[in-house]
Length: 450
Image 1: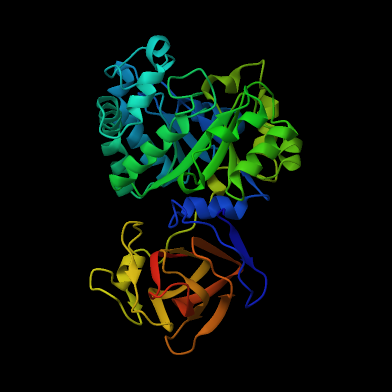
Image 2: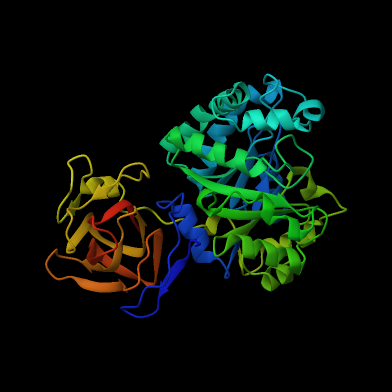
């Protein structure tokens, strides 16, 4: 199954099929991308080296258009001077987020067969033998351990971003279908992505929105075989260099792989024209790669300005990433099956802790937002013990409850419930009365966005 956004068209609406657990169930960025999909597209800009001036190309976009890109992109890089400047890049990422930008990070990473820093052509664009691929994918082997040690180099930086409240559109092992990089174009490439995901999640990096990426140099029919699986991806992206803009076959292929997840243009050579984005409206953002922005073979200032000024384009001053109103707020439940799984574990913004009720059919959990707030959406990330039938109820006084959503066909995974008109509420409750298992009800996460 796939992740999906449910728009509530009436006060109460029957539930539809839901996906398996989302990776970033409590992500405001992911909720935002899902909400704008089909109606708006975020402008963006990749910057790359030198990391000592980490927003050089975003500044150039501003100089051309008078507007800041909505998405700021950078890379952890591989050269000695760039590795030494990673802290400067992270500091700028925090500043960009604070100013309203979304943040996306990639990594032209050195292979685990060599030390870091390394050479671009000999190492980053090098190859592993089949025997080395077998070893890197074997848990506990020397190369597998070396790969995890390589990931450890960026864990402190990603943790800084987490602690600063920055959600990162993280695009590791980009262009996974390409043959240009040591990590790409191999039958083991999707497995390496899964190992990378699992290892970084185990380090407590719950602020990562996982972005899978391929490019348009290979046939559109060859993209899906590099997909690591829906449980490892939040956003599906395409890099566009062979074509000025994705052909319909690439657009259709990416949509089919995404299965309802947000899609975006991870890198482009040419800034998409307004008419192109209107014709393929599901792209949620696009980023020119650094110097391509000013390459006359791909872009003109007038064309860039036209897209930035287009009505469907969202620039930085228009970004409205929702706030997780429930994070860390007082939370109460009808029961718990263990003191180690309290109600507050559903609102701690962690996907490694959970609330679990007693083994009864009648159960509820609600969060106190502290004041009447404007609620845009609710997300529920179910553990195996999910509700087959449940309601979302809201209240302003903890006495009178109003049902604003009902699901009569729940099948677990993650439910993302968006309201066409924001709901005023201080208290938000999930009330369930039909269990899927002999156990009670269990939620990894209950997020309320406003």
